[in-house]
Amino acid sequence: MEFVLYEVKGQVGIITISREKALNALNSAVLDELDKTLDAVDLDNVRCLILTGAGQKSFVAGADIGEMSTLTKAEGEAFGKKGNDVFRKLEVFPIPVIAAINGFALGGGCEISMSCDIRICSDNAVFGQPEVGLGITPGFGGTQRLARLVGPGMAKQMIYTARNIKADEALRIGLVNAVYPQEELMAAAEKMAAGIAKNAPIAVRNCKKAINDGLEAGMDDAIVIEEKLFGDCFETEDQKYGMAFFLDKNKEKVKEAFKNC
Ligand code: CAA
Image (cartoon, rainbow, N blue to C red; front, side, top):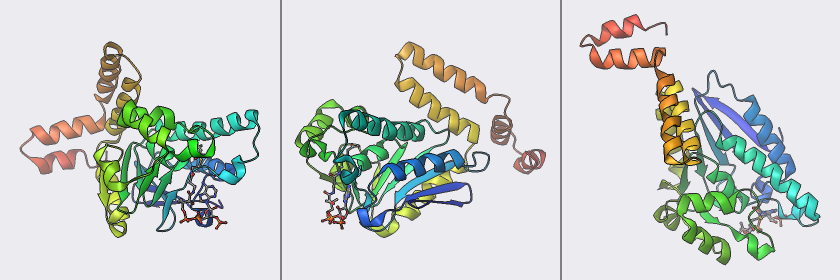
């Protein structure tokens, strides 16, 4: 891989978009590599992913403007689909994905972060959808996911004005969950990921699916989605162990009984 790094720490996989000289902008090659990286994640061992950008300045400064500058209508649509397909893969990835946003998250950068389950950022992070200033709409899901995340009024304001916002404002409008000093961001992301990874893996995956699928359905259907995923957890070793551990006063006995699970 030329532009995407992948490392595994314990049960956490860390994906780093690494095209620093272009502030990690997303060209076709980066999108292809991201796609391949996701396909190669060992889901038997990795329980949570972190997505970040290389360097101290930028998470992802958007889709590659140079590459887009000469596209025809059909090529523009195809480029949008290419980004959307990878971002959707990330969004419905079986395990949680935390975006650790370490600087500029503009256009496609803001959009890829919104395809992740959880967003945390550094204090120098800047968010925005500057596309209308370039004569285009957001093209990797921004019109859809920003409105769902921060509400249509705030999303429309950000997209129509193309105004960037800083980390504190992103926190205030609910675009990110927390802001950290730059040097503490990755440690915070890894701590959160490890905290997720230590929980029952089938239950965590089912929670992600229940939330994602439920948000796309009406409430009557959404609660049925939850019922099925809730039921699916029963008879798993995790459920038997988790509940036995809570109920039994002799915790050591329970640990011993489940030590090979
Ligand atoms: N595409 C291609 N190259 C980019 C880029 C992008 N999105 N963003 C930055 N770069 C390149 C610059 O061209 C520059 O390259 P050179 O050194 O070869 O000139 C290098 O990265 C460093 O950038 P700057 O010199 O501009 O750095 P700066 O600190 O002065 O400014 C910035 C930083 C404010 C992020 C500025 O680079 C910028 O505004 N970038 C573009 C942001 C943007 O508009 N993103 C949206 C793209 S459209 C999109 O994403 C569509 C979609 O929804 C799919």
